[in-house]
Image (cartoon, one colour):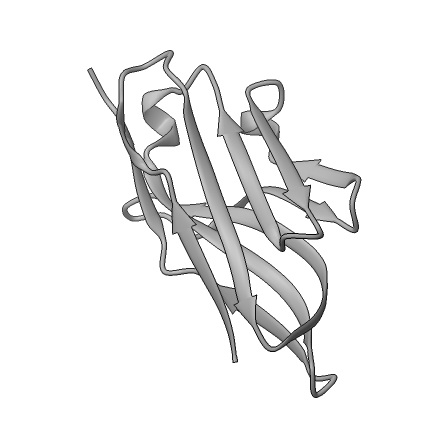
Length: 120
């Protein structure tokens, strides 16, 4: 069993910043990749940013230059620093991890989601 616990969502004004954090725990052998997805009302879930291994990062075009993803492999954590937030960034943000469990099964695990609201 592997769990992801997220924190850091909330209400922020346009132009403001928020930092999301996610910690993985449980029967983990290794984590190949961690990332953040988001789902706005009436829209499909989309990739925001991901990090594979320790250094390979990928960002949605809409957040490039504003968001930064970082990972601490030793602690099984991933953070998303979000700057210059816009109302269109409003969504539920989900942490995601591609995990090899102790039984060597490959799992894709999701967090429970944290709401980010950008509004004046």
